[in-house]
Length: 387
Image (cartoon, rainbow, N blue to C red; front, side, top):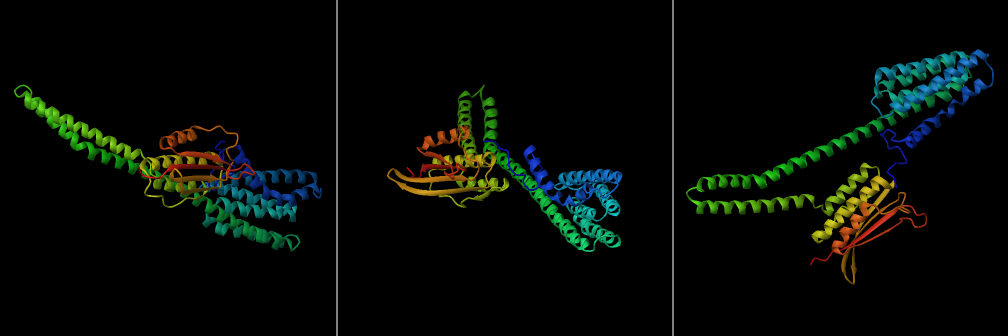
């Protein structure tokens, strides 16, 4: 498996050639409506020099339109540069429509789409009707068939304002991703501060006491060695207790919990654009070691889904079972991604297997859809009886 995504996420720039190709394909599909001016050039109704200039102007229009929409849709617009480019497209549409005739009026539809896709909503709100009005004015004043104008007005207005809505959705998605990253960073910073406070509370008193008793033992040592020895014994006792407290605190920080990992799985899958079905609660009577193993396994399984599977949906279930050997709790993580056929087990599955062995657990894997071999389902069972 690899971690390349098949589709370009909303608001995300293409990350590889495949995604660039997909985005260009979606832009290029709408260029099919350029068939009218292309046909006009091919029909030979214009002088050779006019045909040549028209072909060059059409190529410049299509290239500028494609680059502008490709680069600016998910970015905050650089108003001056984009505005000048849009004005150039509008000027080309006016000149070509006036000089080459009716088939070239369709260029105004692309100008309106460009305005909606690249300019701020406030600007697009008045500029799209302006270009549509220019389309109507040229169509009604020149020698054009009257039915052509109404047929182009609706696509121009609808396409322009629809792209404005798409642009706002994309940029809102980008802002949400940035806000989510900021929240995650703030949460990490808060966790560091909490760790610092806890370590200060754990060690501050003990280290201060060790320092004071060390100074006292140093002063007693020449004249009262027996009393100094008592102070040294107290120092040893305090330092041992401090070491126990630190180890206990660090173990608590490192040990994942099943409810916490379920919440983390929902967040990670949602951030990756994977539809998630994850239970809200976990059993509260699990043995501590079994819960820790399941929590680590869930974290590793969800990480694999996000990074490698290319899945659109992931389902996590917790199922209690009664067996001859006692009660079990089964954790199942199933996705609809590429599947794992022909792929060697990685370090993640090896680590899960080793952790399960410490609690007598079991691990099975299979395709989610056995018929097609698609998807990957991981099932773990751990004893849930307290001993």
